[in-house]
Amino acid sequence: MNLRGYTAEHSDQIPRSPGIYAFYVLPLTLGSLGLYRDVRATDEELEVARNILRKRIDALRVILQPPELDGTLSDKPKRGPLRTRYSISCNPIDLGAWVDAVDQVPTRELKAVAQVIAFSSLFLTPVYVGVAARQTLFDRYVQHKRDYYADGSQQASFGQRLRETGLDWSEIIFSCSNVDIYGGMSEHALMFVEDYFHAMAKPKFSMS
Image (cartoon, rainbow, N blue to C red):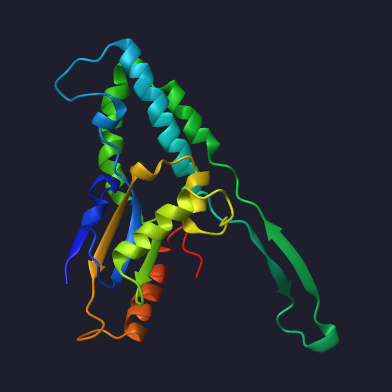
């Protein structure tokens, strides 16, 4: 049993075995912004980097946005016809303000800001956690990728929800651990592990 991460470029190496997996947003790097640590960037290159950074932050805004809430409340001490019930719904305040803030970063400081954000990407929680019990980890990866590029017929799928954020498939990483459900962990136990990670990480795009 081992834990490894795979980018889209190396997805052919994903294990052909059962296991548990998670998708993460690929950590931002200077290279992905067209910047390099020991090379002085021009103002034009920095503005290109700003636009790329804005796109990434805007995608993260969608991922980090709290869910809408909808339900009922009632007068707890009362019973039966004495109880008053209320219908309530809550909409989160949009996080767009801190997306717009990237436009206020001085051009000369943009490279330093990007370096700090690259480190902070390591603190992001997974956007999806799942298990492959009756399929292989590779099969599940391929299925999610197929949903991402589908024509919209699978709108409830993780792939479609990810595409709606504006993130490219190449901007995520597939992290997984293969599990021997035949000689070790049962399918039931594997499903418990999935529930555990759902409870601990609250991945945005995991639905159940």
